[in-house]
Image (tube, rainbow, N blue to C red; front, side):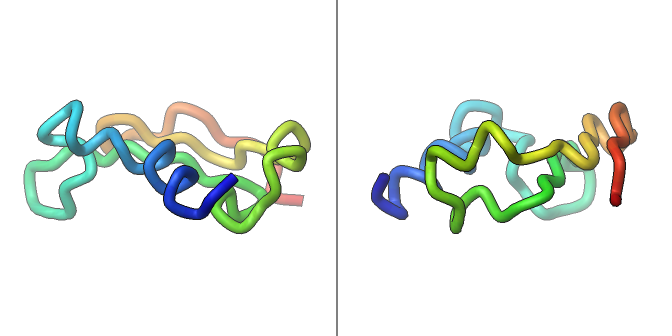
Length: 67
């Protein structure tokens, strides 16, 4: 998968939801922390990636294992 396509998939939110993706005061803090870099990973590696943390609206809504 081309690098540009991966970035488009991961970062399209800012264009769909105006407050998302903005790094400024009052912007929503929605993010996901993965065990591997989703941009550098091969598509066949996505299934083995672990979600370590999910933050929605600035609040942690999921915390996985950091081991």
